[in-house]
Length: 295
Image 1: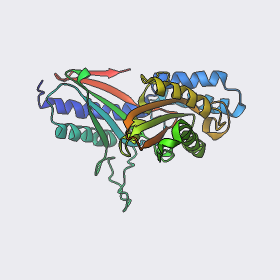
Image 2: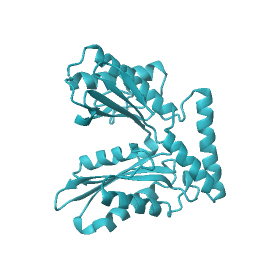
Image 3: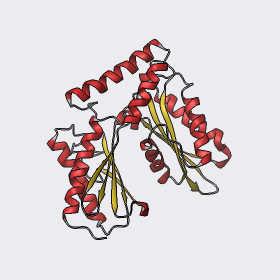
């Protein structure tokens, strides 16, 4: 189905709104898990931190302000259904949305040239924002956009390993636990831990990124991955890192695993650490330009 030229204006507007919303509104599944953690946390400092986090959310909501000063690296996951659309214009529209949101809402500009460290001033630039595009025929005549402003504290704690098949599932678990343990309190736990397994050097990190946006409490449709999620969640929370690294039962709010078939001689594993905020916002746009904000 063809779209009109105004469709791309809608994409820009939605991308702008989603970036801002993700920085202000914590997803309901994340808030629920934080509250559940608070109720059962036994360590005094850990419980105090969780109480402060909940207060942070409450104050930000009442004052209509950002939950955190870090506006992140703008990352977008865009799924395109059975719709005749220009991917070039789609990318440009998302980029325009990020620029507009940054300037309109006076968001902190984070994006700099990696060598000169010169700030672009509007959170856009070369290959920025990060935009992943997937084709999904199940969406029919719609486009789905998910904004993930990724804070540097947690992103800097993320890691990739090209394991050997002989390392097996024990090697995967060891790498995940080492990554979380090394992160300690530096990435603002309790974390959402996204694990990608399989694929290749490039795709495994994308799998880990996709894992962090899956709602907490959901389980992978892959039975082996679902089993591993439960085992890793228990193991991660036995590390004792706790909220903000001050000790406690909850080092992670959840562990999500995404998998892909891989080469017979490879076992890529990526761990994408997400801070307690679990920032994400999403919407679907129909081919006629009608917008449905999700959640």
